Length: 435
Figure 1 (cartoon, rainbow, N blue to C red):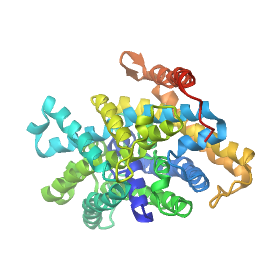
Figure 2: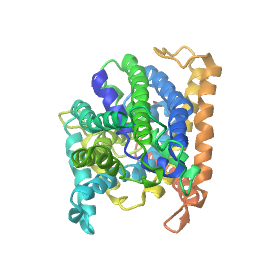
Figure 3: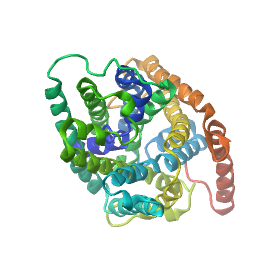
Figure 4: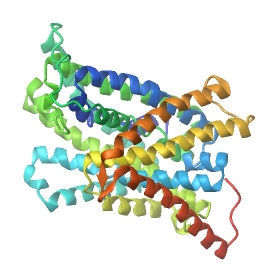
């Protein structure tokens, strides 16, 4: 995978266009939403992109963040990193087929009634699995095409909104929302900006990873911020009330600003968003079981690859598991996802610091600036925001349990599974050397 496909794939692993911002606007209003979208990248996206840039260029191994934590902190914590990431993926990956179905329902409501919605969501899972089996290069090139198709309607939307605004007044930027929920707005903002480490797992399938990973991270970070802020500012200046925004409301905004033709293309873009994010994320997550199997922490069956170099057993197994999570509500998925993903991300920052201490002479084509204090400093912003997300999940409930308790139980299960796995491994064959 060359640089441009890597940038496009990373963009979809993190963002996938302005879709998903609606709940930020509906919960916070325009000004607060724009402030959140401008500040969160500084304290969340940029530090994470810098961390990924250093570790991916220093240790460009298949399995990415799992290998980093394994190398820095040992076998146990490497397994916990993989477990947390894969557990988070179960809830994260269920969101995107749901978005696809939501926007499909805007075109043909009868197609998504009852069990048909589940069938369409399953079709997204199966279709992306088949696409993934054709290789990382195919997924990366497809991401470029989907990037253009997805954002083209928003370019028109921004242009028409600004022309019709014609520089007079502040539109609805100062208009408050009736029932503000800043905690939800922050949680959804964090979710819309997370996933920078996902591209690291395909390092062996990337051309010149030491050079291209840092460039891809910083380029994608700028693209994500711009494609979030510009459309939101444009519709605010045009004068659309923030209370009208909830998941799927970009269609109504396009219809109001430019007519039904643009609304239709925005709906198609929403469907592209759901499938376009699911596809490269499937590529990313499926490499983690492959890396675990290479270290004999999963059956060797997961190391089987096809003629395109794809671990096809891992792809199919992940797809089957993600299909089982379809049906959770959007807010519940975000709460669980943030807690589990946040824990795995903190382990990656600990690995960054530990490798600086344990392997100071490790070649690092790209470094987080500021030496060891700089490596510690970049972890502070994400840590604070993760703590806030955990606090914000205190009232959510999943399967009758508090969402935070549910997430904690899922995280702790990793220790039990590791103990069982290592015991079975010792009963079978000697453990492999450390990564």
